Length: 273
View 1 (cartoon, rainbow, N blue to C red):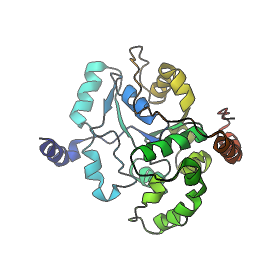
View 2: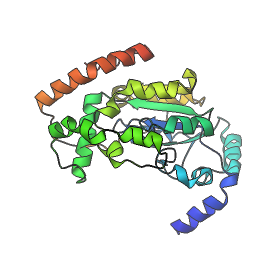
View 3: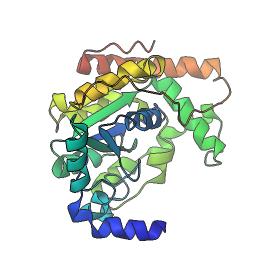
View 4: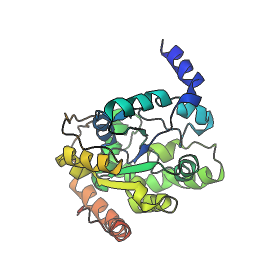
């Protein structure tokens, strides 16, 4: 049944829309909760696959495959006529923000797309990322050992990815606990291509504290009417032991200069002291 539906969507890909928005990351920052709550808005249509990962690991499948994940043009026009409040569809692939090819690929395919980045305290994000990998049996090292060995594990991987677009790096995707938290360098790649008004940067801590308010910011950004019917749910919530205090102190010191550079770039104090 599912295979038949996939074939049907692929056959009708030329009749389908491309996304109006993409949640580009970051991983373990609340993107699943943001997306799954956002698509409850009556003017937002979900993709058939929340994490398409087209512009990072599945780019070779081609744009027709990507289109097959979204609603048809007819369904968009019907929704706009019936609801009378606009229409938006999109996806959320949190590896995009960190992947070296994703900004250019998205810009070339979707120059007008709206981009949403959800950023979490990089220390907490790193530990959540590690804990998810350890739970799944992918990571055998302790957290302290994993962050100490990250440079060794990732050495040369991004350079190889840039040289060979077809190269997939498991280490770059799986073990980038600290690197993914250096948000300033990642956002610069996007801002070098996209106008600033096409990028909305949210703080995860604000979303966790008042999700309705942050969802309102997102709908404003997408040009959709405000909605008061949110029934907020949390998704993909991890539970793990408290981080070692000494490791936390070292990571706070590591990220402090990068967070200052992020403030210089965006003019926003994320208060990740």
